[in-house]
Amino acid sequence: MDPHQLHIQDFHYELPADRIAPEPLADRAASRLLVSRRGVISDKTFRDLPDELPADSLLIFNDTRVVRARLLAQRPTGGAVELFCLEPVAPHRALEPALQQTGAATWRCLVGNGRRWKSGPVSLSFQFAGQPATLWAERRAHEASGESLLDFRWEPASLPFAEVLRAAGHLPLPPYLHRAATPADAVRYQTVYAAHEGAVAAPTAGLHFTPELLAELAARGIATGQLTLHVGAGTFQPVKAETMADHPMHAEPIIVSAGLLRQLLAHRPRPVIAVGTTSLRTLESLYWLGAALVRGSPTPAAALEVSQWQPYAALPPGAAEVPAEAALQALLAHLEATGSAAVEASTRLLIAPGYRFRLVQGLITNFHQPESTLLLLVAALLGPGWRAVYAHALRQGYRFLSYGDSSLLLPGAE
Figure 1 (cartoon, one colour):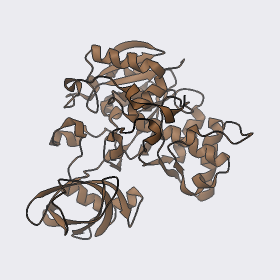
Figure 2: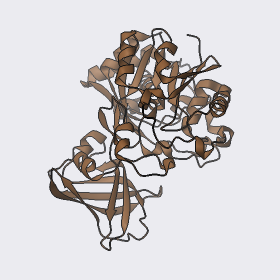
Figure 3: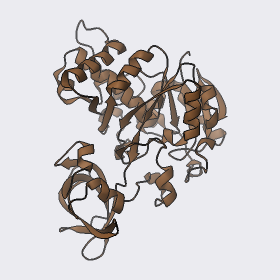
Figure 4: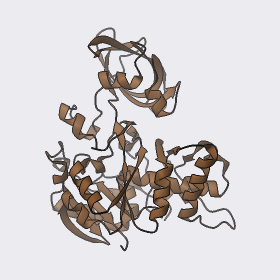
């Protein structure tokens, strides 16, 4: 199957509005858990997860933390303008140094209610450590994508931009919730293990885990590991093209430690279960980064990036498939040669039917929107059986999307 030719309408299903969970449950682990094991579906609760995982599993979590990326500014005339920070542009393109930038910075943003913002700065007054502070934004350029480049400056200029966002920003809830964030969301729209700031959307598969459940996994000898993919707003980007060939995937930064690479190597061939689509895309991206290094490709060695269609390109004449172990070893050798402690890369990887998984054997994930790239990923893992899973979830009253219920998808033999 050639993913270029996939018609997104073939991945439609009817999702009634009342099946979208508007709020989280009071207890994270009380959500329901649909288990699909080699095509056999059963209904559990999330607390049953330790009993349902294959023996000797390694669970991989995404430890990104959602930032308060939504800023509500005002024009000089008093009209409101919403600024949604997507990614840094200058003086740093890498996310973590950009969040530590002081005084001024340029970011790519979505601008809401911006038609009346013709020129000049908009501003936002806020409090930091009990003292007055101000953020100004001026539009540098419109982009064809509909996004804008905004020049920010702020006082006190000594504040890192991360502190500006914490003090002045709002949590960017998914647009399909159609509501403003509440104080409860500040806690519940973060995983309990969130560590590294940079996401504008939560890795929602992890929202079901509690400290008690993580402790039970450890007590049962279930190994865990952590990586970082800073989820971008593109995760909500609808597929507008008729076929996937015309849909551009968004780039997202990933950070994976040398320790996790060694853990993955030591764990093979036992099952690796990704907690969320972001963890899965990161793990599979590691394979493609390493495979390019094995083949001597100069681009990944210099830029460390995975393109949208890289997995679907024909092998060079006479070339053999790179084993997963060799790809991971190549990444470790690259880190040693460059004196780096972690792989820092970006990925645009599209996982869709026709994709063959190299590092992942199972997935914990929520239920995704129709005609989305996240649903394509699930269909790649389950094959046509994804329809049976979603039909069962709808019949049985499961709650969908970010604050909804969960699933454990195990397509192969254990």
